[in-house]
Length: 209
Image (cartoon, rainbow, N blue to C red):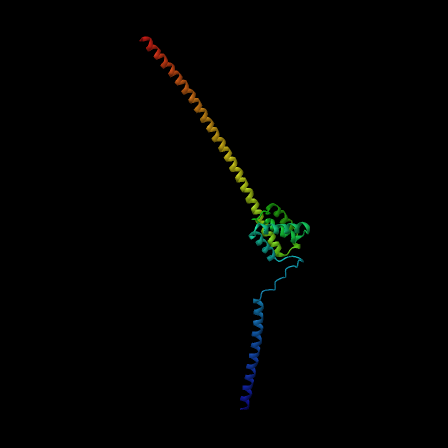
C-alpha cells in the first residue's frame, strides 16, 4: 500500500510539472506569435521646424478653389508676399501650390513648375508630406502645360487651315465673278448684234415697201 501511494504521488507530481511546463511553453509561444503579428515600429518622420501639416496646405487650396474672388485674391496675395519676403521651402511650397491650382486669376502653371522644381531640388529641407504635395502638383502642372501647348498647336493648325480654306473660297468666288462678268459682256455684245440685225431688217423692209 505504501508503495502504491508513493507511485500515485510521483505520478501526480509529474503531471503537475508537465502542466506547468506546458503553460510556460504556451505563454512563450503566444508571446512569440504576438511578436510576429505585430508590425515593426514605424520610423518617425524627420522633424522640420516651422513646417505646417499637410492638412493645412490642403485646407488652403480648398479655400482657394471654392472661395469667392475676394478670398482667392487674399490667399494669393498672402502666399506671394510670404514667398517674396521670407523665402524658404515652406513659403515657396505654399506659393507654388497656389500658382499650380487652376480656377483663380493668379494661376500660373509655368511659374509654378519652375518654383516646385526648385523646391524639390532640396528635399532634405521638407517633410515627406510636403515632398509628396510638391511632386503631385508638379506632375499635374507639367501635364497641364503639355495639354495647353497641344491645344495652342491645334488652334494654330485649325486657324491656318481655315485661312487656307477661306483663301481658296475667295479665289473660287473671284473666278466665278470674273466668269459672270465675261458672260455678261458676251451677252451684251450678242444683244447689240441682235439689235443691229433687227435694225437692218427693219430698214430693208421699209425700203421694199
